[in-house]
Image 1 (cartoon, helix red, strand yellow):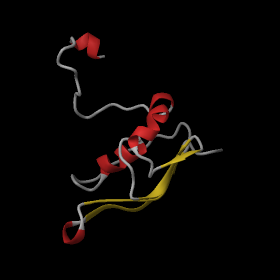
Image 2 (image 1 turned 90 degrees about the vertical axis):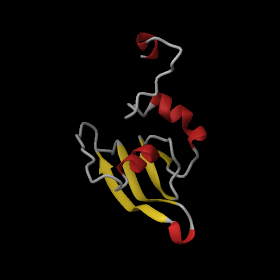
Image 3 (image 1 turned 180 degrees about the vertical axis):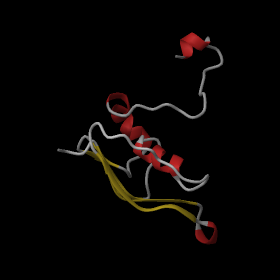
Image 4 (image 1 turned 90 degrees about the horizontal axis):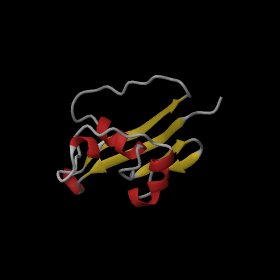
Length: 107
């Protein structure tokens, strides 16, 4: 059975030089259709960074992500609009509400 999501050697860091922090270092995993996955770890370990890359909101420094056999990972977010529209469901941790709209209209 083909994987629903595959992550290969994903790497990402923040900062530069002596202040650079490597958050993701060679992350590899596969998720099969119907599989339930929990991403757990302490604060600051890279969970949100990993999800932002998988969700097409952040480009990785290196590595690949495959969603339904579509390869991405290092592509900028603006190049992945169609992927986010058709394939990736995203519920933000923060509200991201538009203040000029009602609660119902924001949904």
